[in-house]
Amino acid sequence: MSGYGSNNKYSFLGGLRAAAQAISYEIPLTLCVLSISLRLSNSLSTVDIVEAQSKYGFWGWNLWRQPIGFIISNFFPSRMREVTF
Image 1 (cartoon, rainbow, N blue to C red):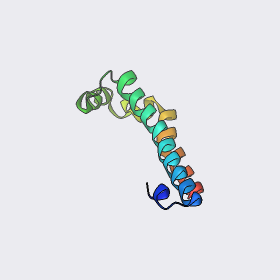
Image 2 (cartoon, rainbow, N blue to C red; image 1 turned 180 degrees about the vertical axis):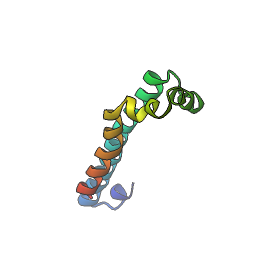
Image 3 (tube, rainbow, N blue to C red; image 1 turned 90 degrees about the horizontal axis):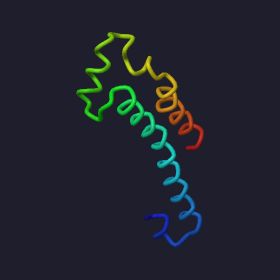
């Protein structure tokens, strides 16, 4: 809104860029959270997710069961934020 309200095309483009970055960081996180909740624990309840992880001890954590999702949701967006800002 501030980029549009200033009536400057560069401010407007900066606002669009910021909105696009915010959306692009949320997409991998959302996909990973949905895959963990729906595929690995079959529920959206945090209690059920914790119970599903506690069945197998340390090696039952979703980090070990889905390492690619962990990397995509945690490390990739943080590295992209450092590069783009």
